[in-house]
Each structure stands twice: as structure tokens, then as C-alpha cells.
Length: 180
Length: 180
DNA sequence: TAATTCATGTAAATCGTTACATGATTAT
DNA sequence: ATAATCATGTAACGATTTACATGAATTA
Image (cartoon, rainbow over all chains, first blue to last red):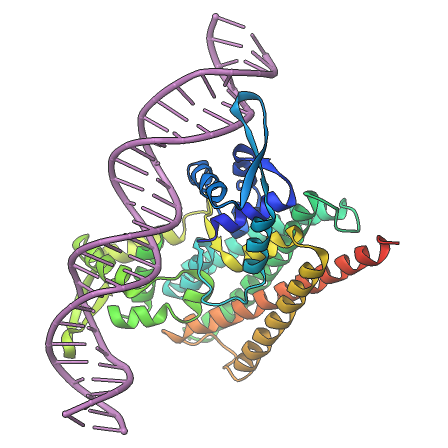
């Protein structure tokens, strides 16, 4: 379970309330890395506070509580971050769909690959425009996060696009060679 | 929950037993796309059989049962495969770690990025060697799956490697420019 | 003042993992 | 014979999601 680390990481970048943390998960973080809703975030924040890894450093309007990581929390985060990857557990519906393409009839498979190619091209174009207007260096503070994420997303879309085009070529070659 | 579709997809490529399906998840499928253990696979197969989407087509030694997809199962799989991606839910510890890099001190962040760069380069090299010895066309039947997956993994590793090197450069530029 | 957004929570149901359990077959 | 592998399953626990619930502050 990585949710506590996701929260520690976000709070280490900048103190936030549970509500603000929740919104963070609807951006690139939730899209590429890890998703969570407010019903798991609020209880998890309370658990982290009990363990002394985060603390409420500000109370605002409408009962909002801003959390910050404690030194103990940062130590915990750091050791998790520097832990070598092992037993990597992945769940990604899109990638699963791609992997199962060979289960479809060639016609359906080609249609799907073309849709993937079109979709990834569109997403990459969008991100490229964003990155072209971005500063040439990683911004300090909370914006650095989005900067790294956008570039990561862009490269992933480009890679998937390239793969889809490669697969289309391969499939078309087979379709052309075989039915003879 | 995508497990039933993963099973339908694998069985559509080739009929298999629960035991063989389980092994499939310890390969590239479980590594990049979707993971599952035998304790979720066996009950899920029974559910799919009750719904008439798969059926036992062979019973072998040691009580093994080979499942195949029924026409209804293929229809179900196909409609899921061709469903446009929406509300994409992702869980990936590695990617989460990458996204949280900006929460670390610059020294730690650089160390982590260098480790990612080294790791992805090694994995890509390994896959490249495999692909160089592979046939020039997508194989028919169950091997097509691994062929598509290997190429996909290779391109993902290359992309992540490129991203890590880009991030290292950016961070080094900032580290060099700032502390003046 | 009515609707929307901010802000937090609980309860029930579902899903997934870990641990436990069993027996058949094959290899040493 | 013994160990390893094949082959399937259940039970308990923990995590996640969906639905329900509440109230304060802001905007129209």
C-alpha cells in the first residue's frame, strides 16, 4: 500500500489540507501513478498523524486542517523512496488492453491499434504545447512536480504511439502475406 | 476490476488451466499491465463459468481443468476491448516514486534518478537482445502476446531512461546555477 | 436565498492479499 | 522415500470504493 507515501511526498513538497490533497489525485498523479479518493485520504491522514509522521500546522475556515510532514515523516518517506524496486505491482487497464490485442481478430486488433495511435498522438501534442511554454528549468517548490510529470507523460505517450505504429505495420504485413 | 477480462483475453488466445493462467501473471503481463495471484484467479474462473463466459473443455491429471472462452465470452471481451478508455485507474509504485522525486533533497533526488537511469538501461538492453533474435513478424497464436509485450516494454524502458537523463540534466543545471 | 463549492467524515460492500490447507504426480 | 512441482481451493485480514451524511462559506 503506497497511499501513505504518496501523502507524505505531497506534504513534503508543500503542506496541504486533505481537501487539497484529494484534488491533487485527480491530476497527473492519479492519471499515471496512483489514484485515491477522499474517503481513503482522510482516514490515512489521521493514521499518519497518530504515528507522528505528519502534524496539523494550521487550522483554517470551514474546519480545514493543513498538514505538514514531521522530521520522522521525512525520514520514513526518504527510506521508502530510496528502497530498490522489488516485487513491482502494477495495475493499468490501458496497458492490459494493449497486451490482450492478440486475442482479437486481426480486423478488430488493427482498429484498436489505430485508435491507440490517434489517442496517444493527440495527448502528446497537448503536452508538448504545455512544455513548450514552460520555463527551461525545473521550478522550485510545488510546481516542480507537475513539470516532471508532464515531461514523463509526454515521453510515455510518444513511446506508446511508436509502439502502436510498429504493431500496426507488423499486423498489416502479416495480413497482407497470409490470406493468399 | 479488470481481472475477468484479463482471463478472458488469455483464454481467447489459448485455452489454459487456472494454474497456467497464474504463471502467465508472473511474466510481462503482471509486470507491466495487471497482476493477480492464484487465490483470485480460481474463484474468478468459477464466476466466469457460472456466467457462461468460459467453460471447462478438458480435464487432465491432478484434477486440472482447462478452460476455453465461449462465444458469449468472446463477445464480452471484445466489447470491453473496444470500449473507449474512460476513468483510467492506475496503480504503479515505480511511477509514484518518480513523481515524488521533487519531494527529496536535490542530492537524494539525483541519486534516485541515476539509479532509475541505470536500471532502465539494463532492462532495455536485455529486452533488445531478446527482440534481435526474434522473428521479423508477429508470431501466430500464444507467442504473439509476448512479442508485442516485449517490444512495448522495451519502448517504455527507453522512454523512462530518456526522461531520467533529462531530469538529471535539469537538476544538475539548477544545482550549478543556484547555490552561488 | 438558492446553488455551488469547500471541507470533512462514517458505514457497508467489494476487492485483493496473506496465510493456511490438501492431495496428486514427477524427479532425485 | 523424499523433495519438488503441479493443481486447486478456503478463511481471515486489510485495503478500496460506493453510498450516505453533514455543515460552513461563497457566489449568483
